[in-house]
Amino acid sequence: MPANSRFAIAVHILTLMARAGDEPLKSDEVACSVNTNPVVIRRILCALSKAGLVISQTGASGGSRLALKPSRITLLEVYRAVDAGDVFALHPQPPNAKCPVGMNIEGALDSILHEVEQGVERVLEKITIEKVLKSIEPRRGRRAAPVARAENRSVGKKEREL
Amino acid sequence: MPANSRFAIAVHILTLMARAGDEPLKSDEVACSVNTNPVVIRRILCALSKAGLVISQTGASGGSRLALKPSRITLLEVYRAVDAGDVFALHPQPPNAKCPVGMNIEGALDSILHEVEQGVERVLEKITIEKVLKSIEPRRGRRAAPVARAENRSVGKKEREL
DNA sequence: CCCATCTGTAACGATAATTGTTACTAATAC
DNA sequence: GTATTAGTAACAATTATCGTTACAGATGGG
Image (tube, rainbow over the protein chains, first blue to last red):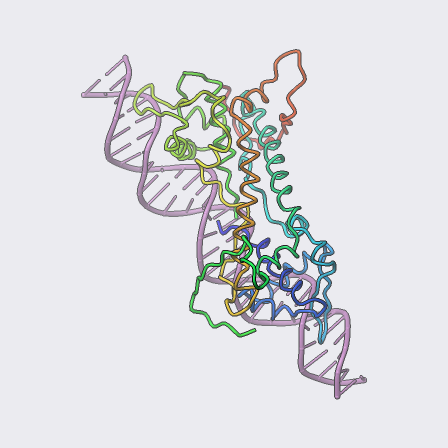
């Protein structure tokens, strides 16, 4: 199963826009940084737009920009905007209702899933887009932020200069 | 992508075994409660066995039973034993290394993923199989445990009585 | 007013993981 | 020895994701 990377790409997009400030970015430009097709970007932008995190404009010299200040966008809002999927799935087929365990296990698992998701949300609500941007642009004269641990996976694809 | 339900089924299996005590359960019996094929059960049992959570025995009157007391098995161990998958995926293709954001975003996302997984683990390490079993077998005279919220999804399949 | 530009979105193929299934080997108890 | 059971390989069906092409609709500049 190719796992869902929409959350990762959404954070990438919003970080680019935080860096661009008021200037709207085109989906082509964003796609070049993310290294994917512009339609993939527009699909995610659409979700972010519905969640009120970005503002898009069609037409010539259009594009998208943040609807809020980077310090007011938490990763929890991003996580909810794109459908990132559950941490784990329940039974594909409902268990045997004639078994004392099968009868009740789904409820128990559902409750566990709920608690786990809350654990995820407690972490995500503390991280803002501003924080992500700062972590990848460490101020000169200081150590790099602990978040930035970039790998160097090259895949031999043409990459435009930005 | 069909999301991974191995964790859910593993918890189901271990709860059944906690209830069975010392008596070993056959993969056929477990499969009947989980409502799936015995091979699916054996695959997960194999992972649980490698993690030291269950003990299996081949041959006539064989089967599997818990290797530890239910109170000593946390869902975190179960989560690690079966490969439950990441909470979110990183970029399918590496981002553009020529972009200041693309250059560093993977490290930032990796760091975020790490923090999120820790949030998940903090929740799971507090829940034991014993607790799950108790939550689906509320003692008489008390209220049902808050975890049990069973639905009644019937799918018109034959279900053996256990 | 017209037209190039850009978003929004539908449609489709390739890819990849999961689950269910059959089939077989190896181990074990009676 | 023989029936029983776990372990495991192999394959099909299902399904979500991602990339891609195509096109309609909106918008701003000339």
